[in-house]
Length: 317
Image (cartoon, one colour):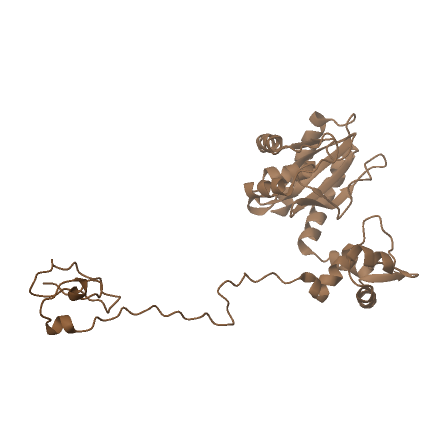
C-alpha cells in the first residue's frame, strides 16, 4: 500500500491503493469511520490527520507598493534650464525685441521668474536690453559659430554653392537633417532670388521640401515612419499629405538621385535637390536650387546641381 503525504507541498501525492476492510483509509483528511464504517481503529488510523499548511501572505514593503506606477519623467519646467529654454525660444525669426509681458505670455512662466532669469541672461550675454525690451544677444551667435560639424560643412559647401549660383542665377540652399526637419546651414541668392520662407538656421519639414525629400529618401525607413506618424500637414494645395504618394516619391528619388518639390511650401516656387555624402558614404545633407516655377529648368539645372554636390562630397572625404 502506498502512503499519501499531506504535509509537504513540495512532494506530489501518489495515487492511493483501493481501500480494504482491514486497514482504514484517510481520504482528504477524513477518517473512514466518519464516513459510516466502524472497523477497529489501528494506531495509524487513530492518528490525527496532518493539517495542510495555509499559504503565508506577506505584505509588500510599504516603500514599494505592489501596484506602483512607473516613475514619471521629471518636469523640465521644474529646472532652471527648463525655464531658460522657452525664454530663448520665444523669439521668432521676425522678432527684433520682446517685452517682459510678451515673454511671460509666450513662455507661460511666472513673471517674477522670467524677470529674474532674463536679468541673468543679460549678464551672460545671451540676451541684450533694448530699452525696456529684450533681444537675443550676440553671445548666442558667437557660440553657434563654434559648432564644429556645421561650421565645417558650411565652409566646404560655400564655394560650390557660389559656383552653382553663378551657373543658375537662382537661390541655393545647403541643409542638414535634425529630428523631423531640415535646418538650413547656408543660403545664397541673387537679387532676383527667393528671400522669404527659408533662412539660415531656419527649419522646414522633411516631407515637403526638396532638400528634406532628398535626405528622407536616403535615410533609414524608420525616419519615414516617424515623419508619417507625426502627421503630414499641408502648406499649400500642392503639399503631398498622402503617405503612399510620399513613399512613391522617395522610391523615385532613390532611383534617379534627385528630388523635386513643386509649390509644396510656397505657391509659384519649385525646388530640386540632391543628397550630399561624406566619408564612408555617410549622408551629411542636401544641396538645392529654388526658382519660380515658370523659370525652373530641371534639365539644364540638374547637371550643375549634381556636379556641385559631388564636389562637396569629395571635399568632405
